[in-house]
Image (cartoon, rainbow, N blue to C red):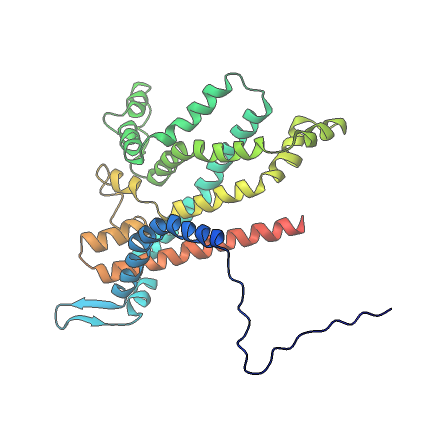
Length: 314
């Protein structure tokens, strides 16, 4: 038996049927959502979008003694790409990234694995002690380490003198390593907490299955725990890449102790700051800042893309 379905055709000239819109309750939910998001959008636009747009506008101009401010297009960017001061700062922070970030993340990962495995006593105290330096403001941490590094009054220099050894050149030839030590001391606890929280989310059934197969704790850490928290490690790596190229507080404060070692272009961020607020060259400073942001964006994307490809192959 077949059933025919008749469709009533609307007579010509009759008004189209009204579409059913969202219910009043759903419209109220939409209005509430927009109202909740509105404060963030206002602050985001005022504090980020507008300054970025103004900086992009400034970077296309140049102020000269004769002629005043004139439009130069991308000439400031072309000049920055061949500026030895800017390029040497980029190389320095790239070296900082290659050396300091693996050490910092490696130490954080080892501490997180030890805490998660339960082999340490007084775990809460250790967790708090490792995380505590992150709670110290970066300016205070740099001033504290600057005192410890001091060649005349620092305890390391006095201990070396007492032992008849030469004073360690923390504020001269070891300056980059000294800054690496300050950043590592400050951020190991922060990265450790992220990794430790990810470890606590792994199902314990995986550990039990590995132990039944005869895996040791070291093998479980290498083959089960670390692959399971790969996304957390990637997150800390991206944060570290961004933070390395934004290095500013440490060289700016240590510059007062070693002005002959740290110049105004020691890092790209410090260079952009001095261009804008010391040399009053805000146009060129804006171009340098945008190029630095471009380098950070490209490196962060490369790190994320390579990690995703490695994860798909595994």
